Length: 362
Ligand SMILES: [Zn+2]
Image (cartoon, rainbow, N blue to C red):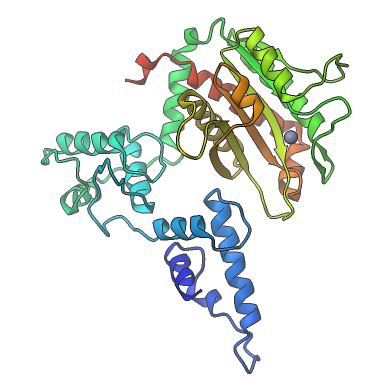
């Protein structure tokens, strides 16, 4: 417990004061109070890192906490294909490179070849040795670049820029939107949210956005449509296959036993062993980026799953969770038309970004 407390302090989610907080009148160290504050810190950390916020320090939480302790400058950073460097220092480097217009890709905290190429390019631009290793000299060069960082997330901005220029890539694409549940099945319910109703409304809003961009949008179900077949995932997948869709986006709302869980997550076809759909992963990441950038919902991450809808479809398919009905804040947002419109705009922007011709990424 001592070790995890230290890691969380280094990661900035547990300050040394609250970690040892005692009531001033308490004669004895209150170990129960201490455990509570640590558990809450663990939950916050897990939520911020896209882990299941159960307050339990399992192997994954432990690994993430260890990754979070790295600060830029603690160690030289480079691409190592056999055991990639992972940590908050890598994420900080990626953010710096992207902010300056060097393409380090997604800010995922993993030093891959793309981050290495961006470091090399940065070094070439500053007449440094193009080693691809982010060392002390490289960090000094960053520090000396007195350049105002203009807020926001440049990766997202760049994508929306590409979207405007790449609209022709969308014309005639077929996107199947799949509002989860339907008919008798209302999905999850809480704090006034009825999943089946909210997701069909969001789907119709996405449809309007995408139709304007020349995308052919098909919904697996409507608002008050009575189906003569069971609307299970296999049937939805068969529908998408039968219309030769270019992408499938299934919309859901999540729920959790804890009312603290909040945010959006996305799932694509694959297994945790690493095999799976690259295009699905790409679509999932784009959806989450755009949804979270547009709405401020916490980003809980993209994960591979072998659910029927993802497994049986022959095109990139993603199930996206648009917040938690069990969280009062998420639920309040989900009940607002403005928020659903932001969700829809984010989803449409993500689709647009994915279908933008790769040549425009230069
Ligand atoms: Zn659902």
